[in-house]
Length: 371
Image (cartoon, rainbow, N blue to C red; front, top):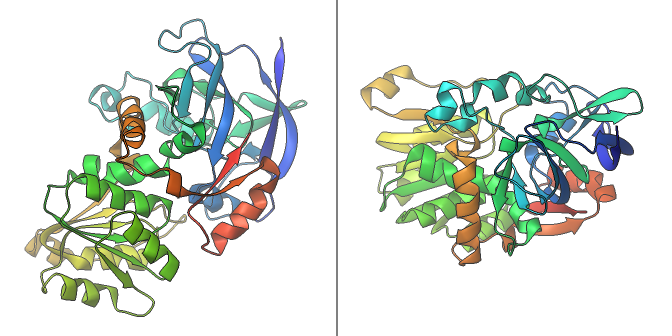
């Protein structure tokens, strides 16, 4: 069996730097799989959760889940993808058969939950190897490698005139943020919105709120630079939550009413609780950020029932990737979504550990590995 050499950043254990290694992958995809030559991969905070031991993560494994590239081989039963197609990778490959998939909720796919979320393919196996040792792919993607084998449903075809470095970000942060507003919350035009956290996801929540016609978009962060970025992406007001009580500041900006919608895009218990407190009677707080393993929150259930407040979760922006990815790319190409400003550093694969150091210090929005 012929193979393809893969140069990849490999997770060998928590709190250890990623190791750049030469791996192998089959040159012949399975019947419903495609081989993609990666052009770019975003460096996402979810990868940092794994790297820093906040999520239980098996090793060895190629991290990365926010990628885009070009199809170089297709399986025998793949009908909607061809060699040379440009694709964005999705970290929730869908079986297209379970009740969630057929009802339009592929991010909840039962088979993906049982396999991709355990970093293996639908058959329970891996595709990468280092000699005789199997190497897993993070969320069955592994975009910190210059090639990736993925289920065909995880490769979403896009127009060829879109730049792939920007397109890679649609594979996670952009879709997660915009989708949380448009798909999960189904926000009405004219709403008031709070966004806590001005990182890659939070800034795209801001873009989603702007696209959906919010009349007031309040951003909160402890970084003055990130608050300024929030304004750049469309926020109307900014709160430095290091210097101000977040809930009190929101109430002041909304005439004591609270916001219609609050989106938590960090993944911390006290900011989730603050978002819930900051919404009005009948309002909705949306948990978008990913928390470390074992984190719990505390809310008053009487307030929930008495004031009919809603606390809901959003996974991957409740997206239908085959529809939402191309749509977001079209919005970008028409100047309605800003992907260019999301990229603060373009790096080589060898610089990935330094990119995580920058992330730990709260610098920049997105580092993008270009292969």
